[in-house]
Image (cartoon, rainbow, N blue to C red; front, side, top):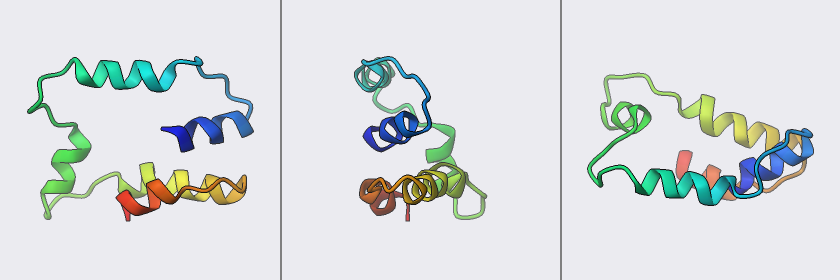
Length: 77
C-alpha cells in the first residue's frame, strides 16, 4: 500500500493521508476466515486471476516513476 501511495503521489492523485491505516482497519473488521475474490482465484489453479492487473500494474508504474516496488514484486510474482 505504501508503493501504491507513492505512485499516486507521482501521478498527482490525492489520497487521504490515513488511507493505509483506514484500509488496514477495515480489513481487520472482517472475520479472520474472510477471503477476497483475488485470494480465492489464486488458490484455484484452474482459474484466471488478476495478478497482473494488480501486481503487474504497480510494478510497471513503479518503473515509470522510479519507485521501488520490491514488496509487490516479492509477493505477487
